[in-house]
Length: 277
Image 1 (tube, rainbow, N blue to C red):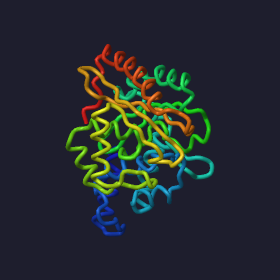
Image 2 (image 1 turned 180 degrees about the vertical axis):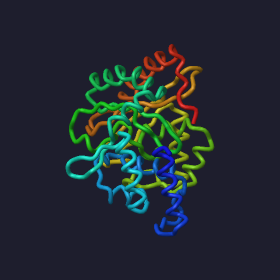
Image 3 (image 1 turned 135 degrees about the horizontal axis):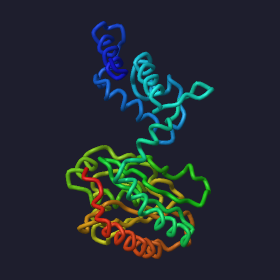
Image 4 (image 1 turned 90 degrees about the vertical axis):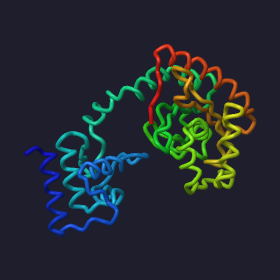
């Protein structure tokens, strides 16, 4: 019996015996549970205790322990001397073979870095995955970097300029799901009603860019434009973020458009079509 089969068998035995209470609504599949455990390491949670993983995964600690042990044995997780777990080298090795985000990051990196160097502002590249944006690349001046997104991190799309661009060019079914859900208010300027967000998205489509002034962090303004891939389909977005209120946002939009045109040309040359989701 393989390690995966053994793990599945033990979870099945727990479920049948009733010895381990699983919270209502928790996925029963061992694969689903394993993925949930890995997902707890997103959004800057680089090191976690077993109890923290269990709580964030909403899984019994015994089930969580077995999953974590299997991941550690395989190399997907690593246990430090302090007992905390972090993402293991083997998971990074496997992730390095992901073709689409990696190829986009590889092609876009020099363009995003050049944008950062010429403006001095934080430069950000993101794609949409499902109902969230995923950061693919980011360069920042180093001042309070914890306030911005992290590479590989996920964020909602309704508040930031880069998210609004991604959402504006997303399929209508995706837009409808976001518009129908509750919209988190980060500041008093965050579009938090359906009518407010619809107006923002319609404006983005009309002018071809987004400006988010204090909608995520009151002191930060960001501007963003879409990236076009093969067949002129939107495949992502790039943005600049700054705190200097003397900066003219539309001037930064012009710089973004130049960078986006160059990067879009490079993506078309390699026939990059983006994610299909």
